[in-house]
Image (cartoon, rainbow, N blue to C red; front, side, top):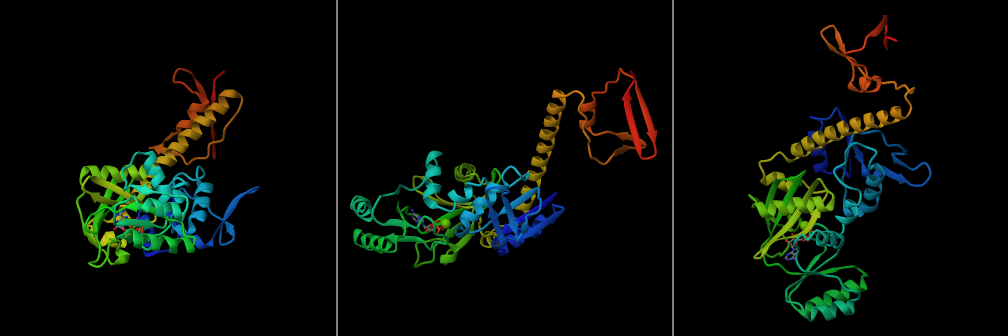
Amino acid sequence: MKAAIISLGSKSSVMTAEAMQKYFDSVDMIQLKQIEVCLGKDASILYEGKELGNYDCIYVKGSYRYANLLCSLASMLEGKIAYMPFFANAFTTVHNKLLTHLVLQQHKIPMPRTYITSTIAAAKDLLKRVNYPVVMKFPEGTQGKGVMFADSYGSASSLLDALGVLNQPFIIQEYVETGGADIRAFVVGDKVIAAMRRKAHTHEKRANIHAGGVGQSVQLGREVMKLAVTTARALGADICGVDILESPLGPLVIEANISPGLQGLSKVSTVDIPDEIAKFLFFKTQEKVEERKKLGAVQVMKELDMDPEATQDIVSTLQFRGEKIVLPEIANRIARFTETKEYVITAKKGQLEIKEMK
Ligand SMILES: Nc1ncnc2c1ncn2[C@@H]1O[C@H](COP(=O)(O)OP(=O)(O)O)[C@@H](O)[C@H]1O
Ligand SMILES: [Mg+2]
């Protein structure tokens, strides 16, 4: 089976590609920046100006800056290749915190109370009625860089004015007191394969490693693990990092990441994360390839049922049991030979024909 990773070529992507080489027949590293999607008549995906090759599995990764390209690419690939670990719309949803929260809401997944308002004035009005501190976030920020905290109406109001001048969209969120810690749960398939508790730097409120946070291995409880897996499912992602705040009233999801860095988590976990991802991708692809073969056979049967005179060429290698040949299952499903009838076998060098005796 052939696989490819389409990514920005980060260390994490290289680690995953190397692990995938142990399972797949070939693994191509494809640079996302060299991808071009063309829609309309003769729609195509170009890589370095040429049609993208055929693969059984493609793992598409990239940051929120490439959300449009990622989504277009995945949408074009959907249904064409045997397996991709994300639904195309996951690239738009997950790369936007507001859209993520809307999906979480639809699936009744617990999250901090989050507010969306029409104007700066409406937001200021709302900020007169909330408890402090309060959090404001860019829907498309990462690494903690679009997350702001305000301890009072005064600081919240001044932040809002700055956001307004910059025309920067924002969401307002209840501050959840966790002592500056959050949980990163790494979901692969229907399991959390590794997790860490990140603790914010002394002078910080954000637990991101990029903001100086420090990760520690953690054994998650059942409830948190289930929440992480449900979140990944809801967002249409088979491989996903889920950020969770452990509030006194239970775990709350704050965001998900479909292009999560592996280095921070690998440092604190004994699990070989790239290998777990590679293994999962391989077995899932194998399962989907088999499913497709079966579906293809059913389709062929349907077509032949409609036209009893129709013939079908089956291109296959031959399986031998000693000197005897075992024919592919589909061959007899089409020919419908039975043990009770007699057959004429005509054999010559390079050719074999089996016919029902009339
Ligand atoms: N509602 C909140 N209450 C308390 N802390 C929060 C809240 N939201 C985010 N944080 C802190 O800020 C960090 C970054 O927030 P997050 O929503 O995950 O954005 P990013 O995409 O930038 O990582 C979190 O890891 C957490 O430590
Ligand atoms: Mg985060």
